Length: 255
Image 1 (spheres, rainbow, N blue to C red):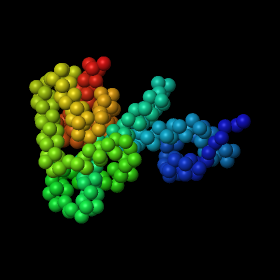
Image 2 (image 1 turned 120 degrees about the vertical axis):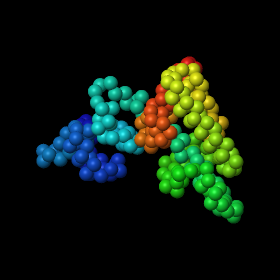
Image 3 (image 1 turned 30 degrees about the vertical axis):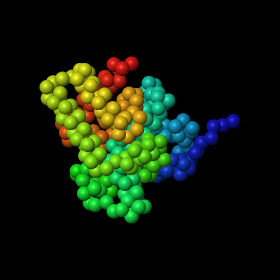
Image 4 (image 1 turned 135 degrees about the horizontal axis):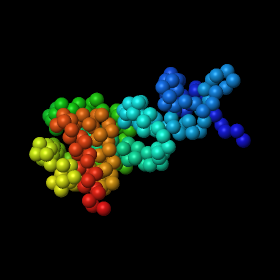
């Protein structure tokens, strides 16, 4: 039986992408259809659809198309391993938005009880971070995940004082990391690994169970997602990579 193929229009509907995007992927060699009709129209196979799925998953992390092409090139690409990593990365992406999740949950509770939060309570712990800018993204992407639910359950009980304490802990970890970097301490030094373990336990304590394996998945996000990277780079240039390496070193020494 001949393999089922799909036209570019059908693939656009299936994947939720534009026909124009599929044409562009073909033009740059990122996703070239396996066959064409006699009239020259694109026909996509099952393997083509799998490749498109990989492309779209990597795009979720705002990875440039050129970099995706490199990731998918050659025979060394392991689809199963990539999907495992992407699943962890998608689940862990919510960590960056933990403060926002708590804000949303507390706002919901305030609306239900009729107890209004002050402006300071709503925004005081976020600094220059604007929770409203990410509210839709949080609810749409993470609202049904176990991590979101567990984090929401815990953070719904946190007071402003709790968040101030969490912020102070985070700032201290950041300051201690910068001090090590300034002193030229390598990321696989026990002092750096101890800080990585401290950060893992902070997530584990405040938000949801965070194994060392899960922490390494987070570490990959710190260097793969430009938004994560920018957060660390604001603190010190090179910090995202340093933190990534310290987390991986910490996980390795525990095995």
